[in-house]
Image (cartoon, rainbow, N blue to C red; front, top):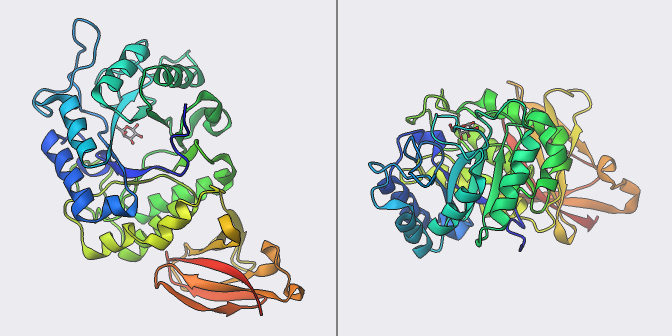
Length: 381
Ligand code: GAL
């Protein structure tokens, strides 16, 4: 099997904004928006239909059926449309007897479902964890679907979604899955973003090429709106959405958009198409970051440092407190002593300009809930 996810997948998923309110016109409209709003050009590729796309029962041959009211033209025709735009098509199922919303799951139907998905031109399967028989190990169920997909005649990315349960990060790569959800569902508010980030700092070492840590679909640009009350919430400020995007990028999480990409503000568009931030996420070495905390404000302020191919370093400085706070990154802590005669030139990935060559340390004041993200070069001083 070729490497399907050399870098974290980028795309859109229907769940965060639309929940069960999905249909073929929406999905086609999203594909169109990928082209007209420059999302494809920025690297977004997968269009994924989440839960609630099927009929409540299988057909007489045990096959899944698309809901005939939501998807009257069928899934093959929809995937043809998506492929005609040069994009890829994703769908959703579950390791259990039912999906989380109560539609048929793939338990004991893995092989027939994999073949059905291949016939429909599916390129990506999100595979959830609801209604799992209690005494069957999730590990076995992901192995089984991975094996079925690897032998269905089509290259299909397997996106595992067991919310970080059962020590998934330790066994998922061996199953053959290409990404794995590492925490529960995101909500459209800052607290949720912060919680997911803090739980995953220690797991940065468990992601990498062809098996990425998926911190969940992005809420950037949702702005408190949407039909899915399991995700919609107060919304975030643009600063918070910018931080969310930068943090997911630094952590090598897939960048799966969750807002209504057909109707975005200019600021949302600017955040999600930021080439400098995306380049950090898509760096070919795929190394996860390490964390250096501010020595006198350990709980609130820290830097993430991620080595990039070609010798550069991505550095993100994050302040989760409610007051403007200093982050002084001592270069010694990242392997650069002052006596080396070298410093770091900081390029600001939001302002798209160099902000200076720093020696020994960079002391920067970070606004509340802000993440400043830089691409740094090691240079003689
Ligand atoms: C959850 C999953 C969500 C969404 C939802 C659909 O288990 O984490 O991302 O897929 O199910 O019902």
